Length: 166
Image (cartoon, one colour):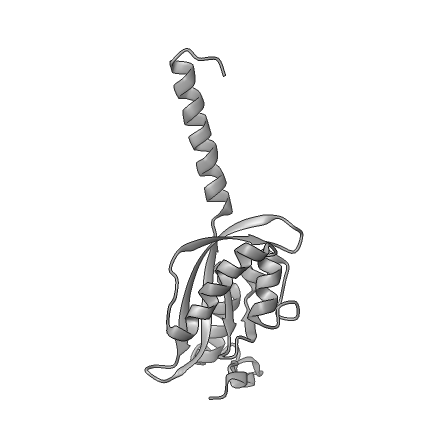
């Protein structure tokens, strides 16, 4: 399979088959789009092939903004030094070096920062050759912020118990 052919076939969205529960491609398309996970897929040349709905909504970007991994990294990670670190993760994909539950600070289109826990993998059909790469993320920003507030609150209580004035 050529890298540029990494797409779900049009048959998955054709009338009469799209709602067919026996059509695996339609099922995969629905799961991909409705998943709360942030997902993007690249081909072997690091062209961004797909962004799912959750990633588009969270970041404000889509594949027209991020046509390849270089463009994606420039938008998600505007700080050059930090972006080079993340580029190293993507460079490792060709050596089958992937990450699991690695938290990175992503800058969204509106400028806010989100903490995303990313896992990556090569994309293959069965035991066949690698046809692309997939990155799957979970937005853990709220959880991290709550953990910071709880820690701050615990420290404040500890100081109050010790009779210290804040």
